[in-house]
Length: 417
Picture 1 (cartoon, rainbow, N blue to C red):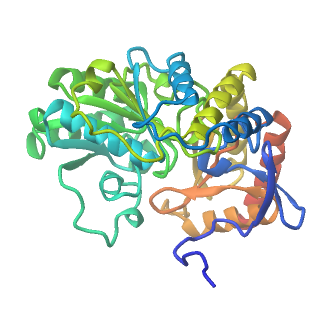
Picture 2 (cartoon, rainbow, N blue to C red):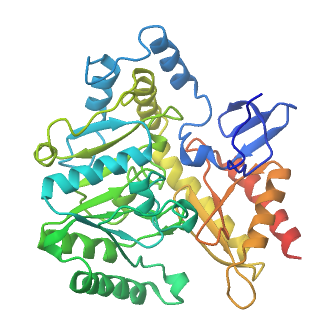
């Protein structure tokens, strides 16, 4: 009898029977408020009727039409529809299955289009689990330990994580940009640097937003040296941050974005977007894949875009995000165990620290587990896994946010008493 790998560690003990909106129902019939959303994937909630209907209809027509062999209507329709929401000038798309594949596609494009070997990533970033993307990931050693030698040509610069450094945001930003310039002088010359890869808000790295000054500094250096700015929108895209794209908070123009997670409400689909001129600079035949742009996933993605638009889910994410962030901060004010609460939209993280300011993994893990026992599902993140993160679906209601905050307040009081 085969079983799942023991290396797959479950964050909660829940065995799901079905899901609806912001709730999951286990095999015993118990209801759980899902503030994980499949790690930010089920943007329209579990089993949104319009997404389900679109997928069911497509299954009866065509499940798989390999897209370098034939074209199909859902792929063409999705490409056209994404043109309505993509950043200005990013009018050419390539589709894959996972976020890791999207980042690798962006890496391949950047190196081929510029003819340069190196890329710069930022400390705390997460870009995937393949060898290439694990090399580019610095949110935790668990993603790259034991698989060396890793890919060459990747250099790391600081991210302006003010709380980590114990500084104000301006000091952290000045430091990060100064260190980036120092990296150019000591490790990767600008003329050998193909791209910056940056998350608008660190995900696995601890839910840390960037800021306008830092992102503007990256854009300025990219323009000066002919470097591509690749913005990883895999977790922050499709309304998750309260704006359609995470980088919209910072007024910066990317050259490439990577997309996945909230794109298709749970169906596997990812991609990259760039200008047609930039895309044309890569090598013919360098993009492809058996399952990329799957017909059912594309149909679900079109329906997802319809739901996001028709139900004003970006605005809801902004409003409910303000409510959630304020509520989480109110809980933190009652205990010194939570050193910082931060977020954008429906991405909110509470960082647990000890009395002397060190990361407190034990209390964070205890809080996450007790919350799960009481019907609120969340995850942890950060280098020390001491940040409890809330990632509800974009359809979450004010009442559901209040319900979650009530559970969270009781849990924090219990584990810190």
